[in-house]
Amino acid sequence: SSRCAVDDGTYSTTPLVSFLQRLQSEALKTRGPNSFDPKLYVDLPLKKDLNLTEAAFWKLPRVNGIIPANYLHRFLEDYFGDAGEDLVYTEPEDFVPEPERFLPQVSNPKVRAWALEVHSLWKNLSRRVSDNVKNHPERHTLLPLPEPVIIPGSRFREVYYWDSYWIVRGLLVSKMYDTAKAIVNNLVWLVDSYGHVLNGARVYYANRSQPPLLSSMVMEICTRTGDLEFVRKSLPALIKEYAFWNSGIHKVTIQDLHGNKHSLSRYYARWNKPRPESATIDEEAASKFLNDSDKEAFFREVASTAETGWDFSSRWMSNSYDLSTLSTTSIIPVDLNTYLYKAELDIAFFAQKLGDSKTYKKFLEASNARQFAMRSIFWNAEMNQWLDYWIRSDDCEDVHQFDARNQNDRIFASNFIPIWNWGLTSGLGENSVIVERIYESFLKSGLLQPAGIATSLVNNGQQWDFPNGWSPLQHIIIQGLSNSRSKASYGLAQDIAVRWIRTNYAAYNTTGAMHEKYDVDGCGKVGGGGEYKPQTGFGWSNGVLLALLEQFGWPSDRDIECSS
Ligand SMILES: OC[C@H]1O[C@H](O[C@H]2O[C@H](CO)[C@@H](O)[C@H](O)[C@H]2O)[C@H](O)[C@@H](O)[C@@H]1O
Image (cartoon, rainbow, N blue to C red; front, side, top):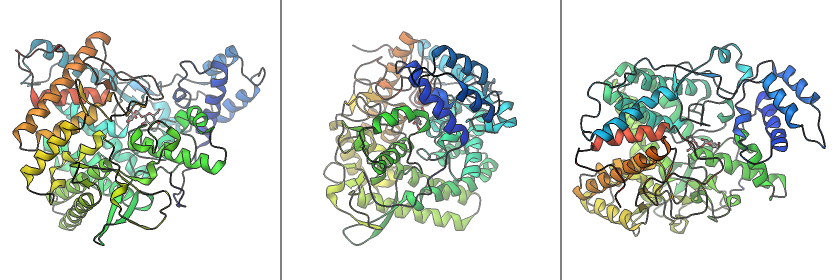
């Protein structure tokens, strides 16, 4: 990992988070590692003030340094509410059981009935922040978002940044425009308060963000509703968030072989300690590092990987099987820059609509520059894919010199994320030829599996690796393939959508739930691996399912069951 000195303005933690982390570590000693979820403890709301709670905690008896289980249990009951209790159920005001003209192209009765069930799941995932949080913010790690929220589900009891994009996509299919706007308004509130959208709406997530898709949410809502007033209100936050990703530690300058200097962005958390929500796990993982500065560097890589949304994946490791080789801050990622290119185009579009020609021009130029940069640094003409670029760990220069050997030629779904925006291929050759090459490259990559697109080809037990397939990645690549204007590519998009919908359906029938991730190795299999138990609910999977059903429909004579 990178050892270059960087002034990153590392975030300070709050007394509440420090205390809850201490509680988490004591609870692990008492309860043992089986089924232990460290996040639970940092989500607990306090019933009384922190000083009273801490005083009672220090008075608890310890036997051989361990708090006895019955004492811990009583302490938790007396001093804390349940995790998640600070968000209360609320019926979304714009929810109706069957919206008018809901999925008109889905005529198969089984699929229709299921789609309506998935639509009704928005009610399960709908919450508002309880008044307790507004009255006593210092007793909660939850942030007091002003408007109703949709959560991913299960242990993810709070709003997440990039999940929200696919939740918005699904809400738009469900015609829940006000709920979709409320989600964006909450994220705008986070930008106003913190200067960026947080990984999630908890104080312990303030040290990092997640893949930046806020402008894309505004764009989808604007396209559906034509609400320019909503765009006008959101635009300043989009511009402010853009600056966060394009300055300071997130900005990287690299000079290509022709002497052109390019500005690209990377993930970089302002944190070099264990993640509070997984502190016991991070401490254990870091125990193999002997000195403090190596530990700090490792914790920084861990938190920065959480910022990527791909936590964790061989994509960020120099040794695919060894988490201690995480090098995220030394990687310039293809997907992040694709999202930022999209943000530049979105902001330019909004500015033009609102008559702000200066902003329009500035962001259009920025998008052209990033297009050029991505072509120069990421594109690999032999593989016909875009590859993440690794900065060598001993390269501490302000301007890095491009070296083609530093492109990471391992195969990941992210190597195809730029097809979300075919504008990024401009300058790569004649459009239909390049589409054909990328299409062939994708087919040969090994990523396409019986039940969808695998995240990578490495089966190392990490959740953003083989054999897991994730809804957001399916959706982006399907969107890209279907937007290429090539018939073959559209056919492939539809084929992947059918595989994905079938596997979601089969798993729903056997487990009664929508899942956070799926195993694409076979139809109906749910995903696994990683540091926490697989979760259900699930915001982005519901959103992607509804969006795909809207785009491709489901005719009455097409089977929904897994084909043998
Ligand atoms: O608690 C561990 C980590 O959990 C989150 O990451 C995963 O769930 C998120 C919500 O669905 C999703 O956005 C992310 O892509 C998943 O990997 C959280 O975002 C991490 O910061 C956290 O450490």
